[in-house]
Amino acid sequence: MVSLRFLGTGGARWVVAKQIRSSGGFWLRADGTNVHVDPGPGALVRALTQLPPCDPALLDAIVLSHKHLDHAGDVNAMIEAMCQGGWRPRGALCAPRDALDEAQQPVVLPYARRFVPREWIVEAHAGPFEIGAVELRASLRLEHPVEAYGLHFRTAAARVSYLPCTRYFDAIVDDYKQHAPDVLVMNILRYRDSMDVDHLTIDDARTLIDGIRPGVAIMSHFGTRMLERDPARLAYELEDATGVKTFAAYDGWVYDVA
Ligand SMILES: [Zn+2]
Ligand SMILES: [Zn+2]
Image 1 (cartoon, rainbow, N blue to C red):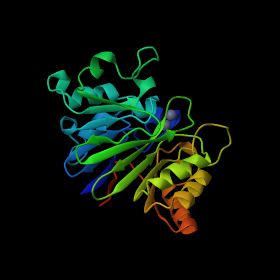
Image 2 (cartoon, helix red, strand yellow):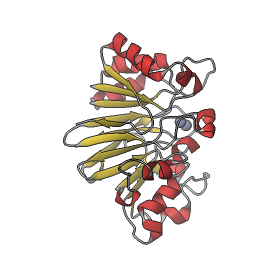
Image 3 (cartoon, protein in one colour):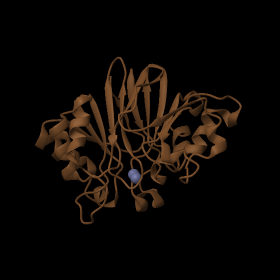
């Protein structure tokens, strides 16, 4: 059994600062293996208040796509919870080098980093890295102000690819197509690009779905403009245009992949 639980579906400073949507990232569960991806502000509280709770002491890995606050704000709290305050070292920490390196304003505090017995540096096309029933590979380097990578998860039953925050460029499609995802999770923060920023828009989402042709597409990590326009309706329009089943994630939503 493989499932995704969205502990947060908000992105961008304003949505996160006001917690209009939560910012806890998502939790991948596959045959007894638990992986938490992008634990932004509030992730620990969101995990513990799910019904049934997502128990951090059962985590096998914490993964960061990049070190921005909306993806990593709770990473130290989650590490402490996974390793029970350091008394029971457990699991793996997977993150880009600039999230760990003490010379580059790390977001993982050095003391917390020492609690985790396994560490995997996420870098372009790295992997496979084995986490229980899950194999993890990194995508090409994305275009974002800090080191950022997509993540390709593979289990015996399904392939799940995650495209975090980035500017759109054609090589993303080639990289993701090779991994033939059953489910593609995309961070569609912006509606249309009024400013020139390193984030995906609804138009990029359509290009990505058309190019990658995943089994199912899921949008998440919404900014204000996306929320104003009703992500569920936009997902329906995308599905109409591409023929690919498309969802807009919401806080607490569980998607059963396989
Ligand atoms: Zn970012
Ligand atoms: Zn983000």
